Length: 450
Image (cartoon, rainbow, N blue to C red; front, side):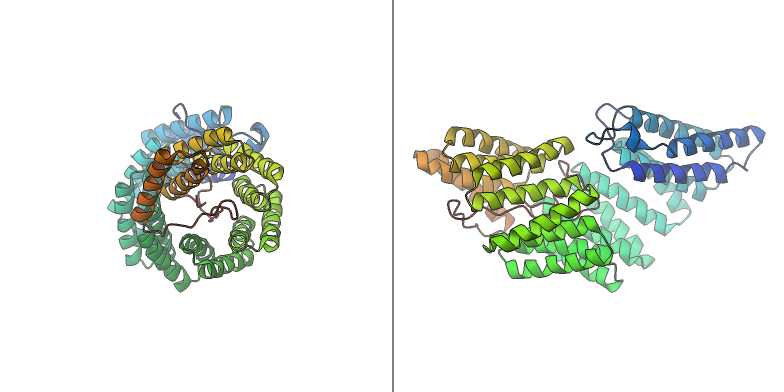
């Protein structure tokens, strides 16, 4: 069963139902093996799993909640029971290839539910089966999925090792789409570790591989990431070029989610260049797409960027309203990185409204989030902004300490120290990058810049 605290995030309903349908199909396909007792059990279990797959989870879970409680308990119970049933019956009658297929589907289901320990345990079993059968395609897929979980857990060495192994296997079978996906994950790990130059090279490799097989979705995703890195270096024209390419590709495959993210990113570049009218036009287009598709994560970060816009034009009440809308969504989604950014912006709003004591509270809260979930660039920028506010109070010792900490982070990241002129221009806004796993966790490569 799922452990306390494990939950399936909102938006996973269709993924879970797909896993259950595939699992039910395996039971149906294997119902002809064994004696009469085994056949009856297999057919019976096929019917039970299929019935569960037909459940409309959207009707049982409030729109604002995660997939938790009764629905997850029901899914978790059947998944655990499916494993025990299959282990008891399948071994004498099924070849390892069929067993590997079932265990792989089961592992995917555990992963989607957020039960990472169970997912890893079963992925390892499926990997052994795949190796014995010399099924390289399945072997590479399993190594990739395990690497993603280790990345979620912050075990970057294990994730890197498995991704490198997956790339080697995929090269042997010329699976270039799989190679590009693995290169993308390696780049995200480098990003998480603050190795931005390395991350850029890996993103460029992933883009080259994606282009070699014309994988439009991956090309768009990688271009968004490259745009973010270039924007961080102040190369706005190059960043705009990559964001524009991402938008064209996302629109060509009718990906509303990716299109909204790209529109938002283009708006950020206009905002940084002082083109406020252009910026707000892009933000509004992105927001409409998010509202139409129910894309709450991207909607939250667009509201944060609108907050930046309102601060720029000096409309602090509207800035507070936009930031409040973003924060409401981010708390609902349990997104700590977004919450850190929202607190940073609230600190700026109260500072510019001459309420320095309240501003301090929000800046300190933001710093704690950035430290806990280790978002180095966000932490450094928050230190510098907080220090600039404190100069008005003449606290030189505290200011000096914060600036030293910020500059040390910039140095370690290999990023030039940004010029902050908060009174005239906002600090760097949020950039959204499309990500296969939409919800940011503690160790997930942030699809938003800090």
